[in-house]
Length: 94
Image (cartoon, rainbow, N blue to C red):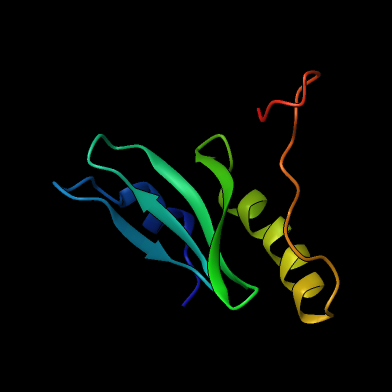
């Protein structure tokens, strides 16, 4: 069942991190300090990788699901391999 904004807002922190699953590998990771991070699991080269979409509420439900569908369709069509990391002017990851 897809996540709703109400379910996300009402998610309370516990003593251990836990996940609120959405669809196609996307989930919201809730940490004990109350922070909420968008993550997505995906297969790559026979292994499971994880992609970060951002922090809730800066990245809302609609924004988190939008790139997911673009990324998922690219994987299903055999397109891109692994997402590129943004790099700064000196080649250092941001």
